Length: 397
Image (cartoon, rainbow, N blue to C red; front, side, top):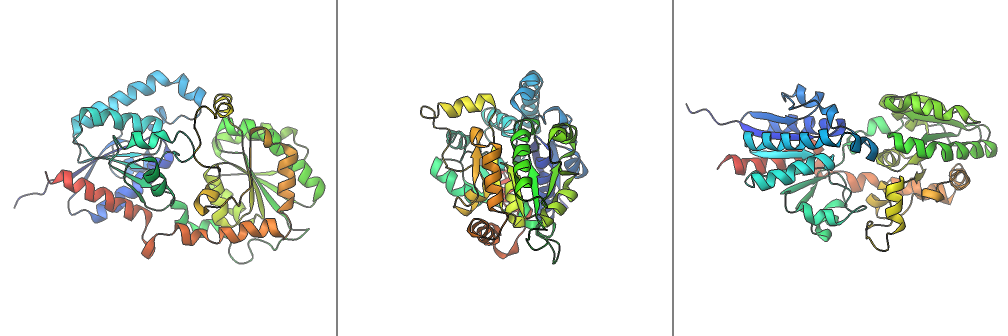
């Protein structure tokens, strides 16, 4: 009896979040495929548990921030070319790149030039709808299909001339039990029961720029409402920086560490003061009204200052819930606007029942309808089905 040829999948991720997405997709893919799936590529612990032997350790390229990237640029460039050569040598049925576009897209572009017959699927869209929209059209030259996590992204790529794009769902919408309070877990809002989350970000640059104005805002909120409890969920690798940063605050928040503690805090919270990013979507799904702030580093702030000459932004919001809902319900403050006084005033306006608070709560109640996949299908399942169909076409040749 003739043995069927295994399906060869080459996966390239650049950080831990991509490693998790990739591992779940591989599990789903194996459940759908009629032949064994053989893995090659660059990944972390989760993909390695699925049988991947990473070409090199993931931590060598999982760097964040302009200064960190520049410091390790020669090594990262070398790893790009090493990965490209390995993809071409392995000649897989499909190349799957996941997030981390500074690394993964540089691999994909070079693979397309050297081996144009290898299909390329990109899992997680770069933020072309907010920064450098011209990237979408460039992606169409080397990405055959894009798997999007946000429901507005297929239309955005179509408008911008990007690759064929399918919304496959966001992993957060499958974690409602972690994010939403059970009965009695979030106390009714009252003068004696107000909990405010303080979320200055997960990257060192974000934390450094936002801790000072967030500390000033916390002080002002506490003066207006002395019984308010403040909780600051910290990622482990920023704990020392945050602990040192809040030392000078007149009002000290309770610092909790790790994802489980963070989500527990979400389920108790009434309002949040947060850095822009995925955390805003987590808060919205949890039903927590928020104020969002962001301070650009000197390089991107300079670009923003000359935006009349360089069309960087194609939307008028940086907040994911606003983009998903198509309405600017979450107030946002950028750069000099993100000062302690302005942030505190807006947080205070959300600490009582009223129009400002109700507007966000009612809008967030629509997220399930907007983000859920039809028929209750899983994100990994839909993504794996698309990857399998594309791979099978190449596999059959």
